[in-house]
Amino acid sequence: MGYALNFNLIWRHFDKLWGGLLLSLELAVISIAIGIVIGLVLAVWYVSAGRMVRGIIAAYVEFIRNVPLILLVYLVFYGLPTVADLAYSAQTSFIATLSLYSGAYLVEVFRSGLEAVPRGQMDAGRAIGLTPWQRLLHVRLPTMLRITLPALSNTFISLFKDTSIASVISVPELTYGAQWINFNTFRIVEVYLVTTAMYLFTGYIMLFSLRLLERRFRAAR
Amino acid sequence: MATNTQEIPALLDVRDVSKAFGTVQVLRSVSLKVSRGEVVTVIGPSGSGKTTLLRCVNFLESYDSGSIRIDGKEVGFREGGSRQRRGERDLAAMRAETGMVFQSFNLFPHLTAAGNIMLGLTKVRGKSTAEARSIAEHWLGRVGLGHKADSLPAELSGGQQQRVGIARAVAMEPKILLLDEITSALDPELVGEVLEVVRGLAQDGMTMVMVTHEMAFARDASSRIVFMADGGVSAIGPPRDILAAETDNERLRSFLARFRASHF
Figure (tube, rainbow over the protein chains, first blue to last red):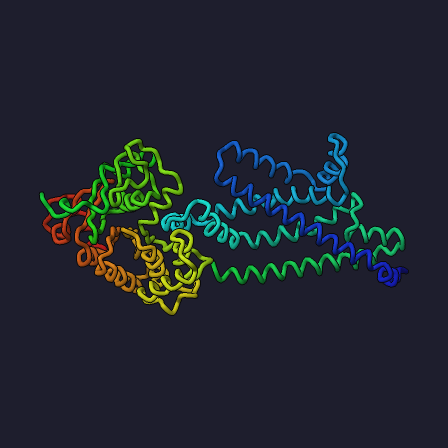
């Protein structure tokens, strides 16, 4: 029990953690935004498509969901440039990977949400003469959003935590910053305590704001 | 029989419509003419095809043979008897001419009472938001909900939701209003307020086809009653003929007897 906690070195290098957190958020926001587009497009396509398209979308989802994210990150960052003549930064590579990854999870969330919209509402939309696109835009998507919001919140927070995997290809996000401080100060307990607190705190803020949004929407159920 | 419904061209003309869900024949050569301003109620045991018939009229369901015309225009299929389904935009435009009120209200949960009514007015009728809002307020006033314009469906009682449902349908100024068991999901004490609204519309001359289990309403408010059984029109005529206890239509007699036993 001779270990005395000393946070001074952590505070001296805190810019590594703070800058890392900002980058983690940036990675998460960009990847989730792209993932939402992928998820929405594929989910809408899925529910209106024939068997073949459904099969292809399902294959994408199953592939991504059954391969560890860290392997996908390696594949895209080290594998792709080897077989194809491509060059991109670690950050770009990670954003591409996490986008595809979040896209696959979000397809599932959105698809089940779209399928949960009561038929009667679609009938009502048809009965007043809305075209298929108008029904999607003004009836199905808004209702789907309300149904899926709790699942979406969980997925977003998961994806935010997944940005820590970017450290394995030296993207200087929060976990990478923590490793850097650890290597340079050997204050392993302190640095990971502070880092954990930062992930927790950010996650809670996200959860809290999403729950607020859910509550606002719940009135409309 | 030379009734006046045959002299004036019918607003709704259903001819020999048949439909099967798989091996189950739900409509068997149904024919029905409804003139402008008429209120026709459709009664019959559950599973007799009443709801399916209504859903065919605005082509929420397709049918296998026969034709349905509103104001002379074939509803779901292109003219010329090819049975080629109309395009989605075309169908949407046709459906805008018929209003429908549902058993389960089917209000859009994310929109207020006024918003529910305004959606079709702005997106389908191309009205400005301000114009749509004033039409919505007018109709909400008509159904006694002028003070609930900004309430969400979840904040309204079943009877209030259904009145919004009616307002949403009639605000589009449809040629014909289809009402599908609109009081069946309501608590008994809320049925009256909804039927009152329908009665008012009937007095205004709105053409209506109404599937209902409210016999008293059918008797008092409709010009004709259609009795459906096993997917076909089993009897049709003025309320006093159809609801007469001494009818020689076996099925109708047993339906009415069972109905009286359970409802009175």
